[in-house]
Each structure stands twice: as C-alpha cells, then as structure tokens.
Length: 479
Image 1: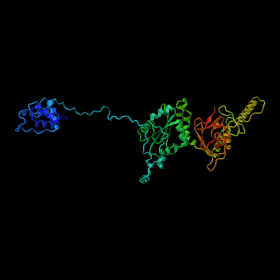
Image 2 (image 1 turned 45 degrees about the horizontal axis):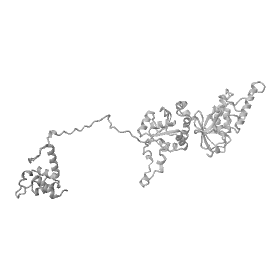
Image 3 (image 1 turned 45 degrees about the vertical axis):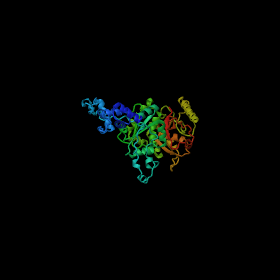
Image 4 (image 1 turned 120 degrees about the horizontal axis):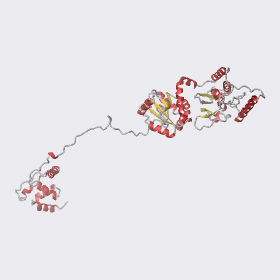
C-alpha cells in the first residue's frame, strides 16, 4: 500500500478537493488512487470542488457498499452513460439482451434409454440359490460363516463352471476342441440341488468334466438361461445338454436328476470322438434312436443278478438250438471245447491261446482234406455265454469286494461285485456273459473309461492289485 500522505497529496492535486474529502475517498477504495479519483467524479463531488475545505461545504452523500458500486460501475461502462454530469448512469437497453434458449427434451432412439452393455466377467449365479436351506437359528444367534450346513452342501460347483456368457463358453469349447455341457437349473426344484450335491461333486465326474468338457450352468432367473430354454425347447428343469460348440446343435439331453454313475457312462462316447471328428454326427443319431426306444433301453440297462443271467443264457440256447450257426460271427474263430480259446477268459496266456487256435486251424484243414476225422462242432454264442457265466466267482453277499461297471458298445451297461482276490479274467467272463457279439467270437479288450487308459491285458492280475475297485470299464472291439 502507498504512503497515505502521498496518496492524499496526489488526490488533492488531481481533483482539487480538500484533504478531508481525499482521505474519505481513499479510505473507501483502500488507498487506491485511481479508484478514489473515479469514485470522486462518479459521486458528483467534482462540481463543488472549488469550495472544498470551507466550513459550509455540503456533506458527502451516503457511501454505497462494494457490491452496489461494482454493479453501477459495470452498467455505466456498458451503457455509455455517466460522465461528469452527476446524473444516474443510463441502463442497458432491454432489446439488446438475448432471450434464454428454451429447454428441449428429445429421445434419440427407441422407447428405452440407452444402457451400455454389461461387462460382467462371469455368468451370474443367483445368490439366493440355497436360501431354502438357510439356518435362521444360527443367524439369530449371531453365527457367521458359510463353511458348513445345508447351504454349503447344495452350493453350485463354482470351481468347475465356466466364468462367462454362453457365447464365450462356446468359443472356449471350440478353441479347446471340447464338447460343451449346459446345465439349466431351477432354485425351486430339489433335483437341481441334488445335481450340485451328488453329481457335480463326484470325483469321477469332476475329473471327466474338467479334463474333457466345458461346463456352463445357468439358473432360470437369469435372462440368458431363459433364452437358452426357449431356443433348445427345454420345458422341464433341471436339464443337462451336450452342445456342439461349432454348430450349436444339441447332441444329447437329460431331464431331471442324473446320478454320477449314469452321467459318467453317458459322457464316454463324447470322449472317444472330438467335435471335429466326422463320425461325431452319429452321436446325435444314437440319441434320437435311444429316445425312440424309450423305456426299453432303460430296462435293458438294469443290472441282472447271477440267476437272471443264467436263465437268460439258457433261454437263448434253447431258442437257437434248432438253427444256430456253428461258426463265430464277423469272421472270428470259435473257442475250443475246454473254454480256454480266444473268446474265453480262462487262465491261459496269449501264447497258449494262439497255439490252441493254430491247432484248431490245422485240425480243420486236415478234416477238409478228407484224411482225418471231422472236427467237433463249434459252440453257439448262447453256450459260450452260459459257460462264461458259470466261471464267474460268487458275488460277495456282505457288500464287500470290488464293485465294477462295464459299458458295452451297444450302449448297455452291466455292473457286478467281484471278490477283491478275483483275477482280471473274471471281467472278461462277465463281458462274454453280457455281450452276445463277444460270445459269438468277436475279439475285444477292456480298459478304464478315461482317455489314454491302457488295456487290461494281464488277466492273471487280481482286481485289487489292478486298482479296479469302483472303476468304470469300457469294452472295445479289436477289429
């Protein structure tokens, strides 16, 4: 701030006013000389400057506050009025003021406001999936945590699920060359909760799905699940579909609760054929034929007891006694009379079986030359099945031993309990008693139902040593 006495002297020199007026103007403007001079002329004090300092000088008008002064100075500058006449400044012409723009509300497109697409990283699983199993007593008592109880038992298998939309799941399955499993569920159906608790938590199912398939699960409350139900014509929940990720076509469909053992069996054909295999289309045809068979196919998959198997073999033997063919099917050779040939599952090794087959060929050649006696007639498939069923060890009555299931090429399944000390050859006998084609002479082998499993060639090995307790086996033809 400038020296007050110097500012007063300069103000007096410029305006010709007395020192009292100069001091008053300078104090009003914070000792800003230019502002004080403008204020002096704006208030009309310039007209009485000649008589300034006298005792009879007119009193100064009341001072304006800063806001009013600033507004008046702005109007004076823009309106061109003011000057030294002392009159009020001219106001701005109202015609020069532009009217405000009207407020307009318009809609660019559609009836709904635009919403940006959601970028959720995972397929939403409703948080109320297990609300039916809430423990209100624990909640009232202040217990916290979700590590136990019914809610944890029926929780969806989040670790196995694909995290993304259905289209993303298709793309991932196509990239990995895997089949896509779609599980549509409903929180109001207990069968859905049973799938989460029993089927998807089974160790065998988890291993098969995680290593060979892509699992996508959605609940009917989600919009994406409703679209899938409409597109694939799903009218009952829960439903499991196997989708071809390339075409989006449904290959297989199950409705309701499916136990882990049955699902494992049904998934095996899809492990043998990839999505790019030309023969994969027959899986869908097989599905249609099985739906047409209906209850007959389900009845055929029911395991039979030992008595039922023997009765069935005897009935088949009596039915074919009149006109059964003597030779084996598919160009195979019939087994020897002792039951230790190629098709039996006796204790003989592969070399012994080959020697027995060569002896049979030599005997047949000698008989054809007319130099020897005629060879004994070959056994029918029913007789081979009856002999194989008779060689089976007794099934443990106390539920112990090894429980083993075998899937046959025609889609049927047989399961039985064997003593842990039984040899692997008993499994081959069991397959002979179950498959008429195998009993007719077609060579086959057994292997566990997972990719790359070696064939069970050592028939002398015990089931316990082979680690076959609870295993699912697959019968495969050698030709």
